[in-house]
Structure formats: C-alpha cells, structure tokens
Image (spheres, rainbow, N blue to C red):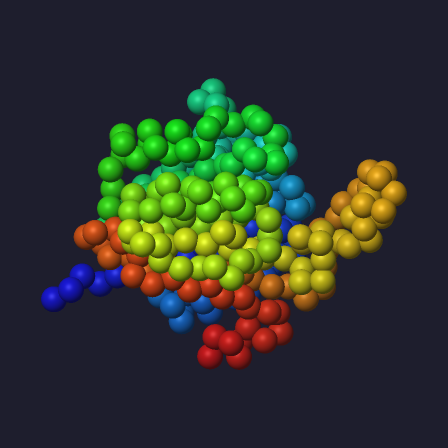
Length: 271
C-alpha cells in the first residue's frame, strides 16, 4: 500500500489583531476540510502589524497553528526576546546571527507519524543586511540535518532571490514557500526534482489595504516623502494559504495548491 501523504499548510503573514481574529474564525474550517498534519503561519506581523509577542503567538496557537515562522520584523517588539528564548514553536530566521535568541528550525512530530522539519529563512536583497547568506546557511543546515520532509519559509523581498533559492533547493526540500511581500503569486508548482514552490503565499489581513496597513498614511508617504504613522487596517479580511502534499518516504511534493479565503464568503468556500 502506498504511504499516506503528509499534508502541510503555510498561512501567509498574519497582520495584527484583525488578521489573528480571521485566523481564529477560518482555520477550524480549513482544518476540518483539508485535515493537515502541520499548520504553519508566518507570525512576524501578528502584534500590531510589526513584530510578535506572547499574546499574539498564543492566540494563533489556540486557533490551531502548530508552528510560527519569522522574518525581518521578528525583533520589533522587545517582548520577542524572551518569547523566542522559551517558545520553541516560534522561529527566528535560521540565518540570523547565532548570538540572537531562539531557533531557526523545528522538527515537528506529525500525527501521521513522520517528522516534518520547518525552517524559517530570510533573504538579503532589498532588505536590511543583518543576516548571513541564506544560501550558505540553508546548505549547511541541510547537510547537518538530513530529513525526508522539510518545509522552508523563505521571507524575502526580491522575486529573483526567491526563484533562485527554489531552484537551489529543488530536490533537497519538500517545499520552498515565500513570504514577506503580502501579495500572493500565481506560480505555485512542483519543480522538476520534486520541490513544491511558490514565490509568495500572501497574507492574512485587510483586503482594501496596502499590505495589511491603512492606505492613506502610506499613500501620503509615497506622495510627500514624509514619514507617517502606520496602523493595521480593519475592514474585510482575506486569508492566503498554500497546501503541499508530501510523500513521507521520498520527501517529494506530490501536489501544491494556493488558496485565498475572503471574509464573509469563507463558509461557502469551505463547504
């Protein structure tokens, strides 16, 4: 009998309280419909739109998320320092300096049996150059930590950097899924050697916003060049996610599927 696939879901960057609230509303329905073995969410924007704290992390865990990945905003709230020291389910990017608290990966024991390794990784192009080379960091990690099932959340700005990483890791990880831009891309596919790939999963936040934040201050900043205070946008929410089915023996992706759920219609979409 063929092995049952291991199903992984990555939810795009959760933005602030309204994004967390929508995860609480829709994730139970998603889990009932798709029966995932592991649910991962990028949580680096979950507290006030920038950063993560224990309350925002706990709220997402209580909603049904198993692992939270990070990114360039992981340290924006000082509470994150203690959180990452004690909460193994919250990951910093693997290629942050080793002196920073926390872990860049987690081996998650799935209910189906196999262990899935979740890795948080950050890009460098068009971002603050505070992290080590992500290519050499993940290369070294995979050589030291051989596992069949590995999902990498690559938190990066540049499309080219994400695509290059996808081909670099093709056949070496089960899935390479991008986050950070908050805009889902229409390129989810299984690469030639068996790695599920998508340039960006998207976000969980306000649809009528600029990457989850209120529009007017950001438009004003682009127009005038003057700094404005950004606030998490309310209004109708969306949840972007990507599902990957993985062969537990080979670690190859068998299927990848990107989905978006709209507030007010997600019940119908999941029925």
